[in-house]
Amino acid sequence: MSLAYPIAKTARAALSSADQAARTRREAEDLSGDHIAALETEWLTPAAKDLAKWLEKADQGPGSGFLQHYEDAEGKTVLAVTYWKVTSRKAKADKPETVAKPAEDHTDDLYFKHNRSKKKRKPKPVDPNQLALFDPPPDEKS
Image 1 (cartoon, rainbow, N blue to C red):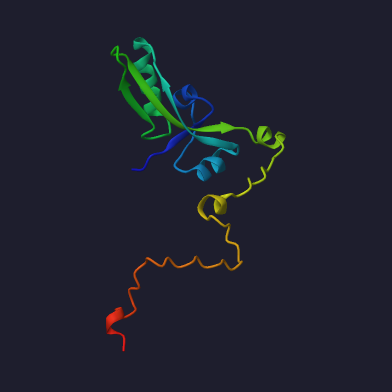
Image 2: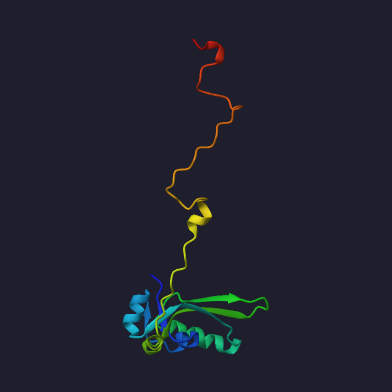
């Protein structure tokens, strides 16, 4: 059985009042009709007396595998709730989309000393003390 995460606005809502669950973001957006901000994980520390109620509600909910139990340093139960966080489409539409200009690329400056110029460079003068590896030795010349 694959994981299915509840669709909700908060982790508490995901535990108690979620009606739908989805495996993928696209599926979550199709089911909810709203914009899904992200797959969110929130950490909740319920009171010991409320823990049984929360776990029962989570078992009755539509999701599967979205709740993990942990213990903090003091021995209190901590719940990690993973859910699809809903934001309304109106909030997304109200914000004007700003497209950032790409920064100037300085890769050539970093990796190539001469910025890939096509000019012919002067060859460096040959050091007279350098060995001539491919010439025959001077005494064998004929």
